[in-house]
Length: 448
Image 1 (spheres, one colour):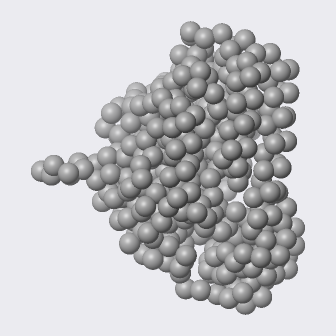
Image 2 (tube, rainbow, N blue to C red; image 1 turned 45 degrees about the horizontal axis):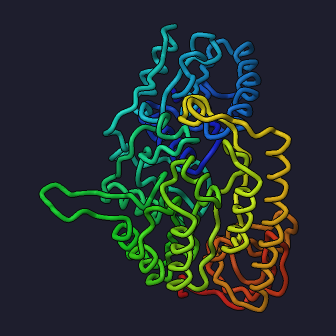
Image 3 (tube, helix red, strand yellow; image 1 turned 45 degrees about the vertical axis):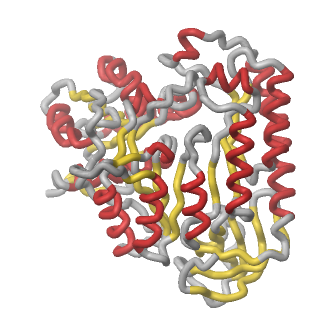
C-alpha cells in the first residue's frame, strides 16, 4: 500500500522546484502526494533561511505540526532545505523533527525515512559539488500552467549578508540535456510557461565532454525558446555584475522569451555595495540598465532592495532612493536588513542600525516604490499587451487574470477565452499592482 507524503514549501521559487524533486524521489519509493497533512505518513517542511521572518514562520508551523504527532504516533516530521542545513542537527537533537535533509541530500530521503521509522537519527546535511539531481523529472504538484526548472544549484558570490552559499553550497550548472528533458515533460503535460532558476543564472556554464566551447546562459535561453515557440520562457535571477549583452540580445530576438528582467540592486551607494561584496558600482548598474533599455525598450525591470545594512548612513540610504527613482522600477521586493548567523556580516560587521530606523527607512522605500509602480502602470494605458490567461480574478468571477510578457498582472472580462490561452488585451485603467482592460483577440503563441 502506498504511503502518504505531505510537503509544505516556504521561501523562494528554487524551494518550489526542489519540493517537486523531492516528490519525484519519494514517488519512486511508493509515496504519493497528499493534500491533507492529517492523512500523511510523513510531513516534510521545505525551508528558507534568507531572512529571520522566514525562519520564525517555520518555527511556528513546526509547533503546530508536532501536535499532530501526539494524535498519530507513526507520523514522521522532516525538515528539509536551507534551514535544515543551518540548524537541522540541533532540531533533531531536541526532538523537534524526526528527519533532517539539506538541499543536496534529497535522493537520500527514503533511506532517512526508514531510519526514522527504526528510531535512529535520520540526518544528512552534507553539501557536495556534484549534486544537480540529474535524470530526475520533478513531480509537478499543482494544476498550474507555469512551472520552474533549476539550471544551477548553489552560489559562489558570497555577499556578506547572505546565507545561501553556506546552506546550498558552491555553484554548479546542470546538463542542458536534463534541463531540456524537464522542459519537454512540461510541454507534454500542458504547461505554457517555464521559469529557469538559479541563484545567479548569468554564470550558467556547461562544458560538454570532449568539447572546448561551453554552453553559456544565452545559449541555454535560445535552446529552450526554440524548443516550442508557444512556450513562454522566464528566468530568475541574474546578477548585475555578470549580466551580458548577449543575454539581452537573445531576449530581444525571441518573442516567447518574456520582456522582464529582475535585476537586484540591494543598495544604491558604492560604499554600502562594497560592504555587501556585491562587486559592482552604481555606475556599472546604471550601464546595465541602459543596455537593457537600448535593446528592449519595453522591458520591465524589477529589483530586490533593502535598507539598514551595517553602517548605512542617511546619505547612503538616500542614494538608494535616488537609484530607485532613476531606474523607475516597475516593482520591487523591499526589506529591512536582518542579520543571518554564519554570514560574514554577522561575524565581522556591526548591525548598528536600530530596528526603529530600519522600519522608518523601509516605509519610505515602500511609499516611493508604490508611487513609481503606479506611474509605470499609468504609462501602459491604451497599450495592447499579450497575456497568458492564468485563472479567474480573485475579485470577480466574471474576469480572467494573467500576466503580460513584462510580468504585470492583467485583469479583463472573460469573453471567448480559457485558461492557458494567449490573448491580446488593451489596457483601459490601472492600479499600482494591476492593469485592467478588454480582450482584443486570441493568438496562438507570443509574437512580440
